[in-house]
Image (tube, rainbow, N blue to C red):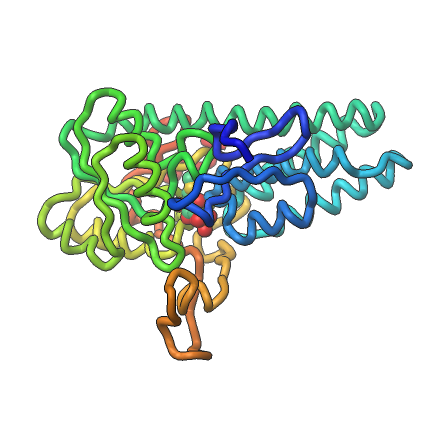
Length: 348
Ligand code: MRU
C-alpha cells in the first residue's frame, strides 16, 4: 500500500478500514496494512504488527468500528450481540495492557446507549467514539511530552527500554514524547536505547524512530545499562507502561524492573510515562496484573538466521514485568507529574 498514512494507527474513512504500520517488518520496511476482518485484527495485535499499549487501544476501537460496519444488518438485537462478541474477542487478544479492554469497553458502552436509535445511528456513534479515542491519544501524548520535557535538562543522557514512542501510540508516544518535546525546545540530548530482548522493540523500533527524528541515539544490549549508569552517563530513565495498579506499581516490557533496580542503585530518576487510561483502579497492586507469556521460539530463534538454543529447551518468556512503586520516581501523565501514589485515584 502506498505510504499515505503517517500515523501509526489510522482509519481509512473511504474504505472503512483500520490502517496500521506492520511493525514486524521494521526497520527494514515501512509497510501499511489495511484491515477490516475480526480475525486479521486479532492476529495483528497478537503478532505485534501493531503493539504498544496506547496503539493497541486505538487499533481495537477503530477495528471494532470497521468490523461493526461489516456485520449484516438483518436484526438490530442480533447485530448488537455480534458486535459485543467481536469486542470481547478483541479485548482478550492480549492480557497485560489495560488500554485494550478500556477502549473496547468505551466502544460497547456507546453502542449500548445508541442501539435503540437504530443501526445507522449506532454505527455513526461507534465511528465518532473510535475517532475520539484516536484524537484523545494524540492530545494526551502531546501533554505527556510537555509535562515530561520539564524533567529533562539541556545536555542530558537518557535511557529508555522497549518502544514507547510514536510507534507505540498514534503519533508521539508516551516515554519518548518528553524526549521529542525537549529536543524541539532546543535541548541537546543523548538517548540510549536498550535493545529489549527478546523481541528487540528497542533495536528495531526505538532506535529506528529516534534516529529518523534526528535525535542522537545509541543502541545497547540490555545487560550494558549498568555499566553506562556506573559511568554517570545516564541522568534519567524514561519508560512507558502497560498497566498502572491503584498503588502505583507499573507493568511494562520485560526487563523494565531490572532497569528500575539499577536506577535506584545509581541514584538515577526513573520516570514512568502513561496516559491516565493506563491506570487500572480495579487492580489493587502489581502482583495482580496478568502477565502475558509468549512463544519459546521468540527467545530461541525468531531473530536469528540459525537456532541459538538447543531444540526443545525449556524457555521462560514473560512479555512484561512489574516495577514496584517504591522504585518509580514519578508517573508522568497528561495531567502532570505524580510523585505521590496515594493521589493516583484522583487521576482517573
Ligand atoms: O509487547 P509490546 O511491544 O506491546 O510492549 C510494549 C511496551 O511494553 C511499552 O513500553 C508500553 O506498551 C508502553 S507504550 C507507550
